Image 1 (cartoon, helix red, strand yellow):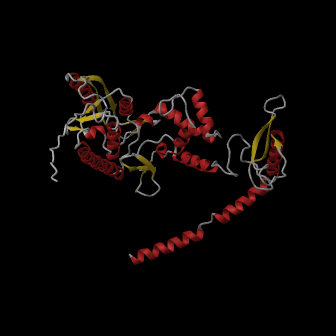
Image 2 (cartoon, rainbow, N blue to C red; image 1 turned 60 degrees about the vertical axis):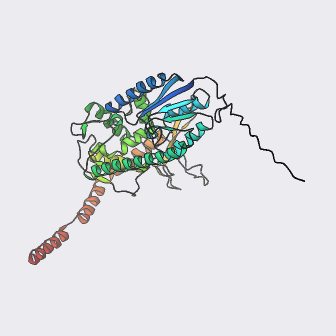
Image 3 (tube, rainbow, N blue to C red; image 1 turned 180 degrees about the vertical axis):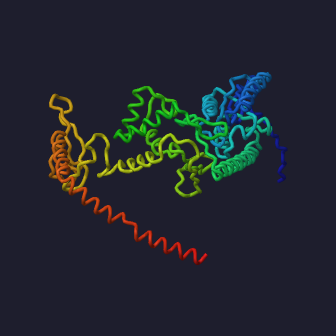
Length: 425
């Protein structure tokens, strides 16, 4: 028996909704379109470019009959290597994902993001919601089949360009350091202004505040108390803020620039993409420039402050400068300092006593507490004893001084060595 084959009849059923947006294909709806503009510095020239981009994309979007203008999102003075601090960019993506935008128009892949991962992640995130991005310079539409490949290539090139620029800037900065050229963030640096040659020039009005901070610290004030005092007196901080903090005071007390010197390259950037900084602990060279500019603090006073800072470091035997007797009395059992404590602080029996700072640690010290009157009495007794034995003490000191500081033998040896050098030469 013979089978008769009939011809297949295939009928095409055309698509009726968009593959990406699920909207009807034949629907006559304008695409809600936003622009994105970014410049990476705050310079005057770049500001002109920034304004021009905003104006251009506003007109460009409105000139298309099938586009409905939403707004132009902007980021000014922000790097494109990552999206963490780009508030305009993040707001645009959030609005798009919330269904307020169908199309984003931007100048180029490098303006959008110089980080390949950030760029592709954002493109894919928007693509899943049917939101398209048009890169005008490269003529790339992200919903096009070739779009992602082209974006990957262009983003990688932009990232490599950013790396090259970063390395050039870093090289230039380190070359200036090696030449001894000092730069500081003058907008957040108290006591100095930028001179005509770019170096530090004394600002006498601000220098008064710096000298006062150092003086208060040597008088016994802690960085915390200095910060509270300056805040209460409505003195502006280096960042022009009304409130001071402990970290700012401590940084100022440790900043060698206040004694006229400059340590360069204290920190460095570890990754040009994340802009992450790290304190330089010997990984790259540092440069110390002596007598670079006029000092606010005498070097000897500055060195005294560093010693005092070290003595006040946290620990069981740290020194304190809170009162005249702080770090002056030692415990006879554990050798820790006596510190001031307030008893009955909220009633009429309030008084200040001194006791071992480790009295109630694991091993209790049996040494007694002392009040200020008792300490003063003991102190006067010790001074009077010293005064009564004054002649004997001074005599012993002069004898020790004559023995210890006698350089006659050393001078004789130096003369002999000098004669030998002259014979050799």
